[in-house]
Amino acid sequence: MLIKNYSSELMAYSAEKAREEAKKHYGNEIYIRGLIEISNFCKNDCYYCGIRKSNKNCNRYRLSKDEILECCKEGYELGFRTFVLQGGEDSYYTDEVLCEIIREIKSEYPDCAVTLSLGERSKESYQSLFDAGADRYLLRHETAVKEHYEKLHPDSLKFDERMRCLRQLKEIGYQVGCGFMVGSPYQTTEYLAKDLKFIEEFSPHMCGIGPFISHKDTPFKDEKSGSAELTVFLLSLIRLIKPNILLPATTALGTLDEKGREKGVLAGANVVMPNLSPLSVRKKYMLYDNKISTGQESAQCVEDLKKRLKEIGYKVVTARGDCKE
Ligand code: 5AD
Image (cartoon, rainbow, N blue to C red; front, side, top):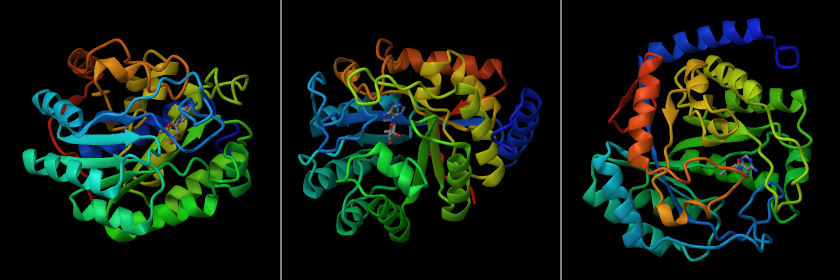
């Protein structure tokens, strides 16, 4: 099977083909998204995640509307035209609170896209947030196999609910992103094949994948981390399955491999998501051990990123970066 027996030759071949596909749709342009981690409070207890409810060592915070707008201001000046509001499932952020934040961002920065990544909510809630101006929603499916999903999550989280959310987000009209971790506990190559099949069928606008990295305060603390190599190979396969997809080279990939982002781009990724969260909270949004970008300011990150991607022939652009049909 393609995934099980991947070799360096197959990786190189797939990467070349994937780059060609990405170039057809997006040229040598790389889109950037400003990631604002608005809260690390979470009602869920996912076995892999460092901000899970039961982690007593997690220092909790949430950002106010003004703090979020301050991040957008800084981001706009740096050339970001997409803001991603990501957080745990924190009941503080009611529809009312979120709609007001979204409306203010959209009225101050009408040329920007707002992406939400705030977990599972009701259809009505997704609709209100969309009506307030949100353009995109990221909700990783985590795994396309129900039995696997149940091994990564407590009973309160249901695979069918996850799928319900993804379906409804698309129906409402969001540009939708799904995704999964590579090398999560109990994952098999068959499961990965099902993830790829799911992506083919669901046909999301975006797909975020990154290696699983264990976190010391979770039930999966002793599980081994996923492979950066396999992640990169899967990026190429996803690009080939859905040539115009928005495909980020993720922070987790950059954490595991110093050159992870470059490798991701050279394998067909066309998006990077630098951290725009206030410096004071960055260390607190620890989904996994040693998450990067906690010391650097995004200003430095973006300049550094531009330089690094230029060296491999790519250009970071100031654009909303919508999915091209
Ligand atoms: N390693 C890698 N990725 C993780 N995520 C959560 N915990 C980890 C971990 N330990 C990912 C999940 C989630 C996203 C926000 O971060 O896929 O959807």
